[in-house]
Image 1 (cartoon, rainbow, N blue to C red):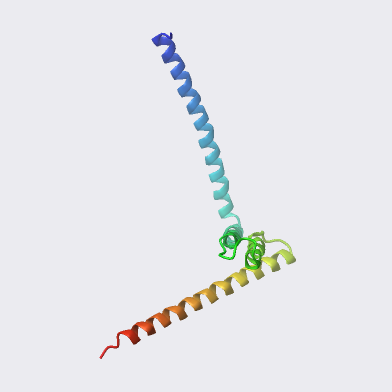
Image 2: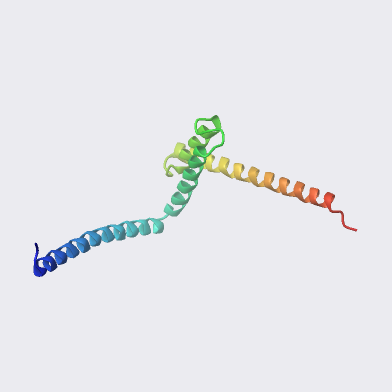
Length: 133
């Protein structure tokens, strides 16, 4: 059986080891944050980060398709998402990236138009059900 003094010494050592481990983890997180912060101030880098996020979102949409992740539409989502996520570079990369972002913009516009049409139809049905004098 340990004496009280041995217990206190071992507890103090365990606490100091824990703090050393957390200090290393926190220091690593701080360095990652500083690196990410530096990326935002580089010329053109925020645009690449945002377009990369748009591309990753488009690729993720492929996994959530009702037809299944192996469907034709999902494969298109994967391809366009990967093209939009790649960094700006040569002429071919820029063409693919901007083309994918343009297609994504057209898709979003089409979805918005369908939403407006559906909303207008619902309003017309409401007016037909409840005609006001």
